[in-house]
Length: 372
Image (cartoon, rainbow, N blue to C red):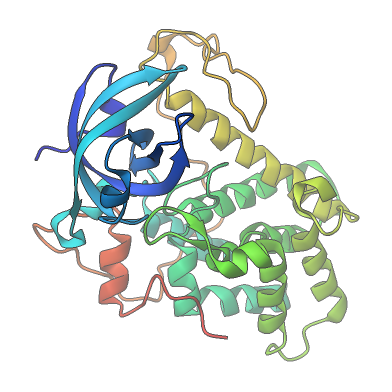
């Protein structure tokens, strides 16, 4: 069966394709008859789907995070695309190309790893440098950090999103620090690279991105502070005040209590981290929202529920003037990674970054939480 992606679905299309089940909910119609509401996904997006008949029998055939081959008809209802499913069949994982179903960063993961280690090498503060090395030379932890998404639905919702977002915030640090005197650049870089580190345990991303039990009950901010304390505890002579300042940055990086911050920023570095994190998150979230509607003729996007607004897509730049955006270079010498290079597997389908294949060859278990 030729794969039809979510982004290719148009009104009145007959859609016969395989999707990943992100959500599965049984509901009751006004006439008292049960029906199934599904959220199906692939790497290009998500689409709602309905099953109206034989709900009990069909529901028993599959679960959330299964792959389904569906026969359906596409239609627009209340301004949103949905599929009305007439037939479905569960598909074994080994028969699908996983890269078709999980979105990934457009950047090269190996290149981002080199940028990260270059940043670590640029740290002049010996204690902060040892701390960052304790995190990123931990193979089990780094195997998660390098491919984790940065969020479930707000921004950088793709494999490699956490690494891409953390690097972007660190690059913004190196833009801001020269503009103001007296800032602790090393502390800011450490905060940028570690502020979301708790997401490696907060989220699952083996299938549809979701939260772990630990993530739901504790959250990435508290998890991150716990991880920070664990690493600091094994670094002899780590200054308590420096540990306190860095913990405060993690605890306050969401800025306000209503945004999930246990504390509000009360140092200049914590305040800068909060705004740079928010800036990169919003830019990515808005651009992703606009790109989802690239095929639309409207100059306005659909309503964005989280931002509570529509966005105007035209920025006044002529198409002929648009160039590929340059990657901002980190002003330090890039050094090779200590890890041995991983050879790609000829003829094997997968992500262009091959995060799963690479980690398998490195004998790292991507989807197991770090042992504590």
